[in-house]
Amino acid sequence: MCGIVGYTGMQQAATVLLEGLKRLEYRGYDSAGVAVIKDSGIDMRKVSGRISKLCEETNNGEALPGCVGIGHTRWATHGAPTDMNAHPHKSNDGRFAVVHNGIIENYQSLRDELIGKGYLFESETDTEVIVHLLEMYYTGDLKKTVLRVSSRLQGSYALGVICTDYPHEIVAVREASPLIIGIGVGENFFASDITALVPYTRNVIYLEDGEFARITPDEIQVFDLLGKIVKKEVRRVTWDVQAAERGGYEHFMLKEIMEQPHAVEATIHPRIQNGEIKLDDERMDAGFLNNINRIVITACGSAFYAGCAGRYAIESLCKVPVITELASELRYSEPMIDEHTLVIVLSQSGETADTIAAIKECKSKNASILAIVNVVGSTVAKLADFILYTWAGPEIAVATTKGYTTQLVLLYLFALYTARVTQRIDDKTYRKLLRAIKTLPRRIQESIDMNPTIASCAEKYKDARSIFFIGRNTDQAAALEGALKMKEISYIHAEAYAAGELKHGTIALIEEHQPVIALCCNEKVWGKTMNNIIEVKSRGGDVLAVTTKKNGMISSVADDILYIPETETLFTGLVEIVPLQLLAYYTAKNRNCDIDKPKNLAKSVTVE
Ligand code: M6R
Image (cartoon, rainbow, N blue to C red; front, top):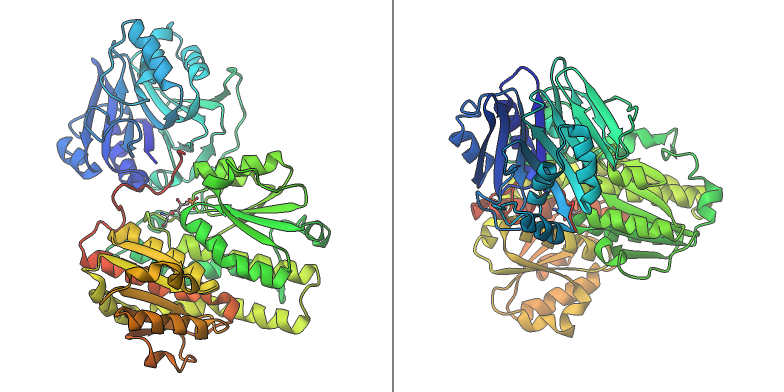
């Protein structure tokens, strides 16, 4: 969702803030603003549009002198992306400015109350109530005022506050939205995530829900919302600046696709020792796993589709029923979950609001939570009983790629590990599948090596109005993710269908030259999918098949073919997704789309 950043030190604050905002822009990018404290008050600039526009209008921050400030990049929730609705928001008396990520759920009643008391609102945002509350409750004591205001707010918020009476200080408050403090030398920072901080420092403090920090150039004090000091651990971030930069690639998405062999290797490698899989938490042993009689996989978007793809390996190897449920649905359903249920939660960011709510719902029913998550110390990681980190490094492009593949490979590892420790697999099969998992980074690289062929294939889809993705079983799960990739970055309508379902209605849409991408990588079912391809062809559809060289029949039914490298049938989903990522990428590129920042989207969906 939105990104917020704060700086206090000796440097030109606006310049530092703009650098931070550029790195947070993937979180939301419809408007942006910065505010700094200067001698005569608070100086503020806000624009609708991208950070680059804000940089132009402020001469890269030079036009806003001052060493203390806050900044914001917005993904609009309340109110259109206009200059007025952009953050920061300033109090009527000009003493306070605020940036906010999250949603104030009781903003309407607070707004009515404040208007009744004579406060003037300039925007349609929920956030603006905060700055007027600060003014209303201000007694000259900033800490007490922040405590009082926080007690009036319901919802999720990460806040950055500046006050002209405290010209060296920034205040950061966290409630259900991510917030990290960066510790420098003679300067300190806060930001929504680490990517904005790594150029300046690797030493960070993670705020917890219900905590706030007073930050000056030389001191950081963290309090709980009763005002008591909280002792915090300083953590060292392992990501470096290069990891968060494009490194010569035209887009982050392409860079992240290319990083997949390495990311998958980094995720697998430390967990295989002397021919045995070691999952990070020893409590996940035979006793615990034998007690599980149902697995629920929950997540949102691509993370959910990784769950759908991984489900087949878990069911097949562990012989446990697996249910996949979208987190946004699970949180409002009455899931059949108890202390014998293991809930596997997948999230790249670890901050997705629906996913967090689903975890809380499952915990209230005594289920155990295993989180597969990329961001260390994120909310999902904190709420889980067991964590398996994907070692994908920072993922910046809104469209996830290495996040997805590292999640999926961890599901494969989990499935094989569980089957082994609960003795549901024979030694020979275990060894064969483990060998196959170890070769997956290489297989992904071979898929990536098809890049030029895929780029030329993508030419065909430039003007498509709609594309179907079909497949069965593991291929169907890949179809879901392939279609999502295509729609989110190319804006072409794309629909994933279980191939066998086409004839139950959707085949009515197949007409002359309708593009259909048929996934035939799963040997167990590709014969059946090929029958569906023939049905599509008989109605004039154009079929691109994704399969392996072993499938000798495909050339007689499909118009175009992409051959992926062979691997174990259970694990083909990880290899076949790569050409679909590249196909979406080149289609979007041919259509001149803004690939890393697709319209209406944000990387981390921290609101419901
Ligand atoms: O950070 P998360 O993995 O929890 O995010 C879940 C989805 O929002 C995310 O996968 C989204 O669908 C991606 N934009 C897809 O590329």
